Length: 196
Image (cartoon, rainbow, N blue to C red; front, side):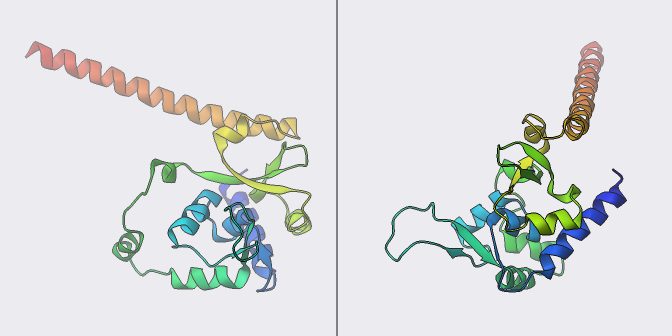
């Protein structure tokens, strides 16, 4: 898939989410897709209070933090508007630091899971009609995974799994070659400096 095709599919998914009424309640995974963040980022934001407003089920005084969290689309839009910045320095100041943890460096993508927990495809690869059908149906879950983790799971489609797996393996092979080249360069450099 070309980068243009991927961009168009992402645009279709975002268009579908933005077409929902402002009072539509989105799950954490759906809200993350809407905001183009990972669910882990939203969870961290809930803990430190830096994210959008959310609704959490449970009666007053109920114990435990496992109640489902939902985000109203209007609150997501308001949070996006309030988070606008005009330059990189303003963004860095707002964040407090460039990266909070090493996990912020790992890119995750949305994947659909079928009722058996198998990957049914990438959220951004699905046609608009499929996204609309699946949103809020409860039959499909959206999970955010690093590509390498997704490639290590069972998929519904062998060809889609092979495509993802080949891309992951190619990226890992490229990284391996860079590491080997760097080690060789270091070795040559130490041999040269040892002769002086």
